[in-house]
Image (tube, rainbow over all chains, first blue to last red):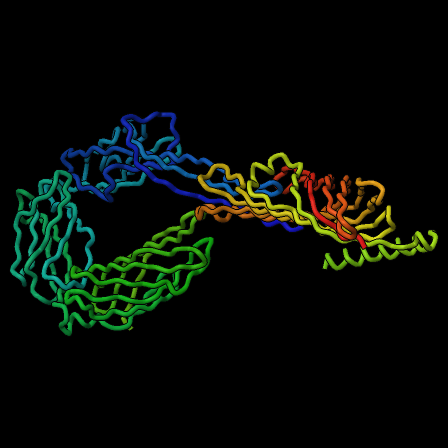
Length: 353
Length: 207
């Protein structure tokens, strides 16, 4: 007598945001996030303050057994569903921690600058801690804080470039690119210091865009950050230097791709294959990698392959920093009816052969 | 292979019977009779949920052959039965399918004479049953299972013969089969009795 019965478990992860007005102190949060989610903030040592709030996530797990029955035989498997719900938490219900209270103190999420220096702020409820936010407290009369996101070099095929960042409040923000004659002496930013702006009219070649945050009353105090753009008109020898065979690397495995001129004049095509290891499935070879390099230098590539009933898909992003190198991230997922979805993100790098 | 073994067994029993008959009867009564026939019938299992799952049930096809005197025969019988239906899917919006195949191999004795239209049988029965379940929904298409059961039991039948000019006779027969229970499946569910009742009609040639 022979009996074949397939049993397998599945995990489906659903994430949803359901803000609620008020937190309950007896809730065990699986994670906490300080809002807004920024890596660092700039404050002046004149008692400047900043209010933070927190979001908590609650994970609930439920299981359901799916069964198929005949007269003599049965088959079943169990689906495990994990729901993660985020809700606002009353800042006063958390214990707020500053790693250096003499630099920045914190109470109920209100961070107050005390003296120049650095302090990390986090929140704790029960045994769950939030991420840390670095508070950079600067002297009253010092160069304003400024950060660009991301501060990268990129090859692009259009004569303008967008950028974003965070600047210390009250600073005067300017952006210039002298070679192209671009200058914006007073760039607007929001109340939390974030800004987005576009530099236009770039001349071909490697251009360095300078972003400067100047003290509002002392012009000798300023902070500068730079973004380097290699702007080449498509089809020129300089731009076509990226055309050819490339060797990529991710998770210690190499992959090959080719960049060629696109029939669309402002683009370049990318074609190749990549090998990805999926937990529970194994290594899938020959995943097709197809896409373009956009005029702004970003990469827009999709991954696709069918493997043993699984549909492998994903997206590969990134940019070419200088002639001959590239880097970025990709997301990959494997889906099959009746199986849990497997997905992850990973970084990649590449060099021209 | 099973059919060949069954045929050899039947032949062995028949020859043995013939030998005994020839040694004990007078020359006039030593004449052997053979019969062979076919029938079709409606098989109903004793499994309560069978009809709920298997809405499409085939007619049982039966073949029978025997050897003996005019009143007592040893016989072998084969019948098979198919059914299709929907398996029961719980906790998923999916439609299941089920397929049932069952074969019976019987060997036994039949008391049948020209003096009476009635005959009775008692037999040793071997049954091979197979059930396959699956689903049509791709989301749960892995919900497949197969169960094969080989078991044995006994059968008893009562029939009525309607005479036609010899050698043809027709008959109507009721047979009950009871098989050994098969315990429980890996999920702990008791496997039901897979015997049942068969009402059939057919014809035989008696030579």
